[in-house]
Image (cartoon, rainbow, N blue to C red):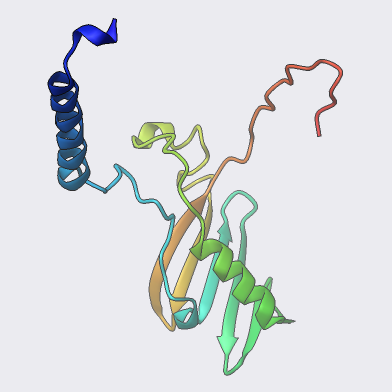
Length: 153
């Protein structure tokens, strides 16, 4: 079947495919329709974290005072491990976007990322807000195993 085509036809086809690849690779947009990272900030700049759980009416504040970090909650002040704060900031800074579930505000309530249901995390540099994140629904359905003998973890 392949012998009836000459080498010139195969080379032409190969050159066309390479040309298409080059055109798509260099002219195609590397941008996604959404950001690949949830947030981008410099960890060293953060001097405060405000966590507002609207449903439970609970506001937790983590503040840096000098070289020490403190947690303020319900008019109480607790000392905080700076390594734990740096770890949390590192996790927030490295969150990657997997997919977008809703871009229209009418669906936000379903995923609990609206103003009334979300847990709002705000990062501050002194009084200036650096980032605001809305944490919503954590529910998911487990995918059933194809092997009925295998237990779900």
